[in-house]
Length: 414
Image (cartoon, rainbow, N blue to C red; front, side, top):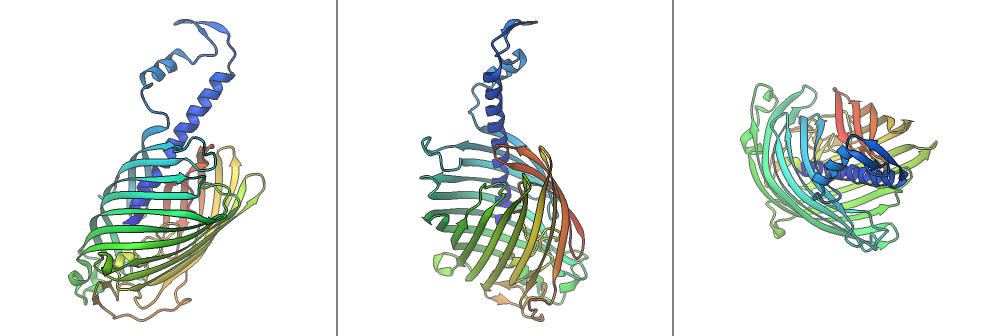
């Protein structure tokens, strides 16, 4: 569920960033033009002014606030197929005298996809006190369709529908140079049920309704410790971005289940040539307790790893290691090549053990690290949408153990 909310909120950064950059460039061009009078069908105008047609459009939209834009953003993912986000966002500086903090943003969006999924969300990311305080708040509703594989090797799966709302609020504080410590509350309700078809024969020996049909209330606290020395948030060329997080869902704070999640990632960026970068990433996750299946380690979500359909490989623990070279071909075009390897492991071994609250089925063979490596690789094309904010449109083709997948998205994978 959180992945859909992140998609909605991240998509809002791009149109607003591009709009601000275009406004600044237009203003720079106007200031640079000489004050020379020329004839036109509309009368004598100054070369220092904009074209009359453009000027008319500017007058019509003069009431539109600077930095605000509403725009559709297409994308594609292996689970959702083609989709479109209609997003609105607004960049601003809470304190105009604060030159160190990145711009803050508030926004919202509506999302629909080819497979019938839909969602809406609103949120804000605030940078305050010379970037010593970072505040995040968001909320949304989702009705999504996806697949969980009962037998990854044979391609047997279960179609799943999930509905529910999610809310989160949190803050980070700079306790040292480039070191942030924070806390975040996450709450959601998820009504999940299976839609059975001809391809789910791999779990006919299990009580499927008992396993999958759940209506969970969740309340959790996440504690992140972050180390961030990147030279840019959107397209870093040097520095580290590493984070260790502990998340606890507990009945004492209103959750239906007790679960602990530990996550660690480390991204490193090294510059080459004038504008190239070698980006590397390592990620680890493990889940303890009695979580619903969608909080387990699901391979292929987020950046870890491209080339795998989320829901095919699931277990309690996972890791992924990858590296990507981003080569500047021309002013606004980059090429990318990436390789990686990862794995899910633990007692579940596919869908043979599913944990939902107090209900558990253990019918699988435990796997250990190294038993089932999952390699990945791919090529990509980048087109820079905003040079000022260094945000790109990303097209990747990645192949994994089972298939090849296209990705169309905004921003780098990591």
